[in-house]
Image 1 (cartoon, rainbow, N blue to C red):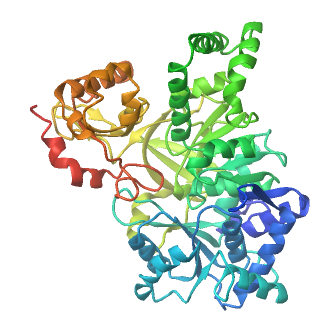
Image 2 (image 1 turned 120 degrees about the vertical axis):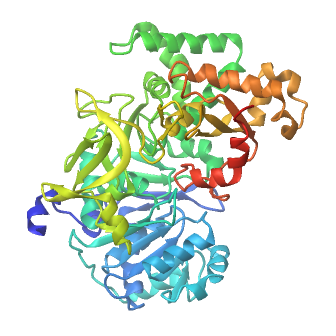
Image 3 (image 1 turned 90 degrees about the vertical axis):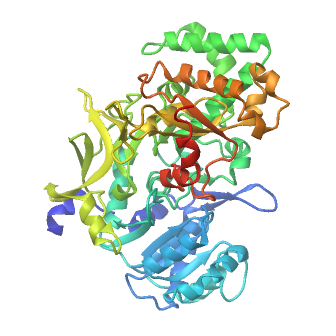
Length: 593
């Protein structure tokens, strides 16, 4: 059976040789850059330097006498060391299990136990102390190593030992497990997704071929955590296979300055990033001098007129006067961006295309390593869609649900045979089993896929109409003063919603002047203000949604949904059960008011 599938995984079909090939081709190119904590300047590690450190760490890991197939974990944000640990682990035939630094200790405990992690690398002493509190519940764990600092139980000590004890790299078969990624879990416990070397290399290599402009001169700014499959495949493994350079964002607070320092030519992110930038541009224009706002509006109008045809001389002039300044906020070189995790808003995608930044919406799951479909220069960028199935993948729609087959589909969920059986199909395509995505969608006449909602999130109103709350929430969040939104209405006469509002943005709106002196708690209960918000949201939604989909009553909140309070996953999706648990009674109380 494996021999029949071999053609879908051409050399190099494991992550060890994929990087070794790049290090041999572009030894002196900068591979990964991160800020020096003292100087705040970016320091770059070349492909050759990175390869040497991986060799040393692999030798150091061998000292720990881990058996092939055992697990190494990290609680670490994106860094040079993150990739070193991953690649060195693979070079010994070990499984790699990434975890988020910003996570509840009980989640770390669950993952360490479930994956049977033997050796764990943590960022610093603070995380080490948090992990120490759960060590007693994790009998598989035999060693914890600090990534920072010097000393016996540090990454540095392993590198030094490995330098004196060189160990040749093991070359895994494409069918061997490479990474165990735990899904965020909007319901229940996280599930460990078993991805092979073949899954990950096929995904990265196929995606790369769709973008001819990507090459060894590409520079990417890393924003998303590599512990998530999208950033892992589309950014880390993808960029390092063709000699690109990846500069790592220091933090969300420094993102604006990091864009200027790195000056990326490509970006892999989520729509939320562009939504925030778009809202920020509009806020700036609202407060700008009249002549500046007039020029901006004129440039936008001229760009709309030129869609689908050559730019006019007027647009070329306005591009230099207006749009060039906006592009300069991204460093001035950004032309290509890939987004995933949620569907990009059409209006925002078109705006960025007008100013010279092409956003390609893609679709996939952690369970598919993750790419299933992509918009791409090779076959076109149809805004509103998530593109066409990429090579090695096949998609069909069954009773409205998207079913994906192919070379990227996971082996299964670790230690969860029943849940694996529930999500996998019994039929095959070219020898590959399919996976039920849980997403609803359809193809257009040109073969582009459109995602319309989630099967599990869909519910029926008392009138018999079906509602996909996620699409309504996404649209509401485009309002500049809405931070987060949650829509519900299962078996009810109409929808209601909880909105997390940004008080600072509201205070800049002249229409709220009469209420600006009120404390937030009082303001969010004031009938006249609630009516103002209701009217604003209704007017925003009425051109995109049917009347029965638009919420009629609102619960206004000043506490955001977050990872810390359990209401958001690591990929910023709402955990519906947790929100209902906290606000369900109040939301139910909106009916009849």
